[in-house]
Length: 257
Image 1 (cartoon, one colour):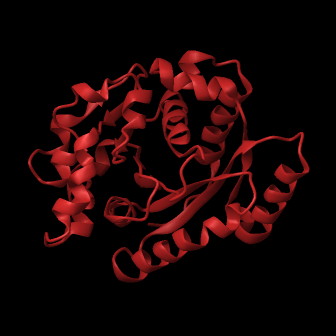
Image 2: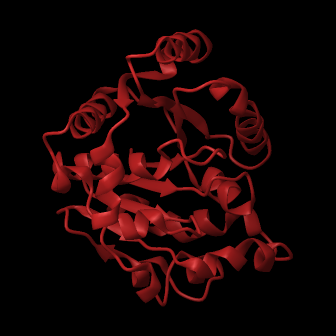
């Protein structure tokens, strides 16, 4: 079954958008048809795939307000098989404008539903918050992928997100489940990284991906050139790990949704 995956973490700087861009790239390069939906007002997934966010006149903001249909905003990228529904700064006002609207939590689900069968995977890059935009992502998704930085208090910071996921599951989307936790920004020269990996595996068990993403200057540089790491420096360790992650995800047995 085709799957919608929300990439979520309310904490910024954990590699959320980096993961959304590079994982979707490698899945597309593996022959899958992928749509990446950018619902972050910062629009970093949009610019990270080579689209000038200041030139986006109609994006996910207009889709959520039901001013345009999703297919009108979807654009191809440099990667064959990878498409993006771009965002721009207009999205900053969406939470305020939608707050009084009926069915506001389900706007993204309503927009995506007619197109699920057209893609092997739809990924949603969520903002670093637990506001209405992230709730829309959780209501629309079949599953969640959580990037978690290898740092102090990483697990403690996820408790509020897990509570939100449980609330959405209980009240709005009973199909929602945790697909996996991705450990990012690992520095294996430190004892801290090993400790966080051990704690994460103790807490989330088999839900933690075997692939661990290292700290990488090249991964940080690539978005500035509007390219995924596969097109910027495919030989760097970060690129190799995202390709490894894509293979791990494709090989995994997925829960029924």
